[in-house]
Image 1 (spheres, helix red, strand yellow):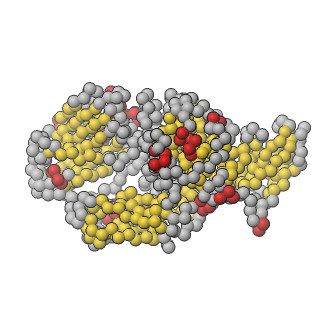
Image 2 (spheres, helix red, strand yellow):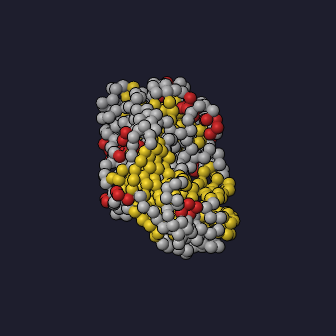
Length: 605
């Protein structure tokens, strides 16, 4: 396989690949949501100036001026199909008043490719904010954005003669589902005003949906710093934030940082950002003074001394005016976790991310309909040298809606080949730049375990560089695989990609599919050498495999790469019945996660 060294975003962009997902004209991209994001906690403020829970439709007027003829409505629907799978509010803790009505703009309902939507929903009365010079609009929302989507709150203080726009959701990734409580500072238009009107505005073209409930105008506190966008990424990993990294593939240095917004009405001074991953890994950054409404970034390149283990990062911002223990200090704290492993390499952070932040969807064989097959792939940076750059198998996290018998194939693909090779029919069309497995049929045990492990016929030894770990699926509505997709951390567009066979397009996922690499090591030093014996050889009825490995797995493959047997190591020796096997050579692969050993034997009846 040809190795490709670290590529920059600019290099990828020069290949003409869109830096965002492209929406299919037939809208076949269907991300099954299996775990919704929980509501973000918002600290209690001083005074509620006004509220509306959409229980009375006469409080609102509706208008649109577009050819799609789509209005806002007040809905009580609980359908999961609203907005092309956006779905109604999920409210397990009864914190949303959606049962008595919520505002809904379903862009998908009557939209059309190339359509045009611009609709408003306006409060018929007015709100008196004259006693409150600093005010915040708080709302609960469920939303999925597309490239044409604009979600806007508009405020008037002259009975609707003029309106000031406050766009929201500008930080949201396309196609990703969000459900949360959010706030926007409307002091510039509503603060100290006696005749305030509010309207919701949706601009789009056959997109998804925006659901809004429980609007409030509350008094803005004087001091309210908030921790935003924490990150930790290897300096040479091109912005990718890996959930799990084998110790042999750690970068020499890491970029650590984030940002802080002053959501309070007054300035903060002596602002400090503290980032702690535990004893010995604590970093402090001086942010300085930060004015109301401003957002400042912080961070630096660090050289942490990392070893195998879990690292739970806590990013805390504080100031002279808002120190630990302050009333609104809960949102001064952010989190970013990662794990250093012996052998598992994962772009996703499922099981690593804080549970309160974890958001997971799925993509798979029934997500697209205009292609004969789909390749899902994650990028990985290998820097362990030929001894450590050994891929034994790929592990794919799957949803319970996967069906037994579905066939998949896994491969390691050169990065440039994956991005530039359009219209290929299968993985084998990727010339000599591919190491692929035989087709693997998903089992009921795989589905029960929530993961599939597919071994390569031989451990794949690679040079240093960047590669895609890939899964090929057929397109089917009956033979289904749904691969978990971690949406918790937004990744660079090239980190996780989707290639539609015959479509000729490679699309960005923007998140992290649960396609992980199980790494091995070629050879060991004499002190810890592994002994393996395979006998009798040749054999006709039974083959016995002895090893000093105390844990791990044993696989037997034929010359085509088909897995004949796959069992866990449960002792010094393991025996397999070979009476039903055809004559020929077979390969034994033993791995315990850090070591790979292969042996061959012959069946001769």
